[in-house]
Image 1 (cartoon, chains in turn purple, brown):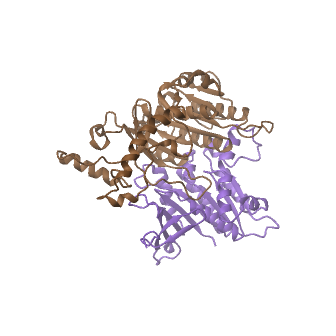
Image 2: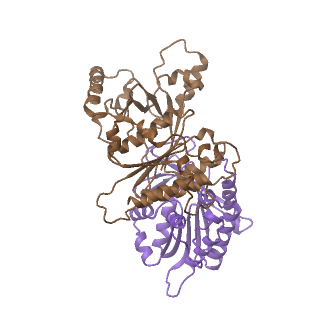
Image 3: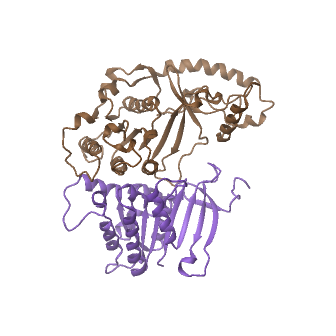
Length: 247
Length: 342
């Protein structure tokens, strides 16, 4: 409960973690607000079906609120004038103001009467895109802070956010956001491509950092490292060096 | 969304661009060509002519026959470990039919060009029209291009908005030299451009348009001119596939014996991971291209056998350094003609 999980990827694509958390929380019966900025609804739907969850059904019964960034941005740009009382959540494309997005999140996760879902969850894929679309890094951090107060503390829910990072990155704004988020997360799942280069049997390694030092002063963070291989319907994890191809 | 980083003089990326469009014509897809550099009519006239199967097959058939007879004669005695490696097929006609081949020395016939419907966007002609949509603080050239693409998509029904239309076709979009000065964007000129978000916003909206309709797009960008690497990182995140072309013209690699058969390298930075957890990763990442009189081919990069005694120490180190990059085995069997089709 009220945990902030950061998904981070470097030199590889960490979106498999997003798919995992999406199907995990939906199967657990939580109400999920998914801010999907990078891919279309059908992409997530097809993968979720392979993992055993139907996004369309979840949407219909009100368990999933899906913000399809790509589609909404087109509506904003090419559609008719919006009604004054309902600003589009993607308004930051023109105004660099993320408040409308936050209002959307808060509204969709506030429990309505008759809702029987367990804790609310906010899932964001991915935060680095907000910077590409004109939001300032401080605005992004404020947005996350507001979401945290609202979702984690007030509604006792969880937040899962994906960010991209690169070593030797020259994107200072992105590095600022990523570092700040690392400091404030309870759990960091860091998917990295192997340092030795590309390999067919081991797609990468994942570092799991449990930030115990965040909540209690004297505690040390717990770091675990596993390697993984992605298959069509699931991901297998194993200790470093013990890939099935080697044994 | 295929994002191509141009090579220094734009020669080879232009070729790739034309291949994409030519394939569209041969498959009967509609085309949309946008450029600020050349008029799209000229681009259309310069497309390479498709090769008819029988003539090409025959040419290669002779070569392949000669090669095959040699192979079966002696099994390997020293490098016997390599015998188990899959043999790379020399003749492309034995592969499954996907895509067509083009003769670079001939131009496509006007009748074939006219057989598909094509739309053009030449920036300098469009400047007189005012954009009717909200620009969201985007560069006006990009905004106009987006508006034009969106108009074509909805008018011609590529987004499925017209239920009457029975036959659904694909729209191939080609955008040349995006981000260059000619589009009014100073991202290629300075380290701290005035508007860092126009290009990325453009790509995001374009991505939305592509996902919503039956279209595919190739963009070429003079990446070597963009000094702000942060923008390149963001652009890579927003594209499905990123390919970089590095030509050897004018660089020290031209004289490197490792690369003597090739004209440049192909760097595949990213491949699409759509509708699935996994992506289709090939087992080698070292690709090089060469432009022969008639054909532009992309092949696996392999080391020529190191037979000479007079190789100097400097170049030997170079070779050793490059050998670390090669991930697949090499040997006499790697005659290597693996064509990448479009």
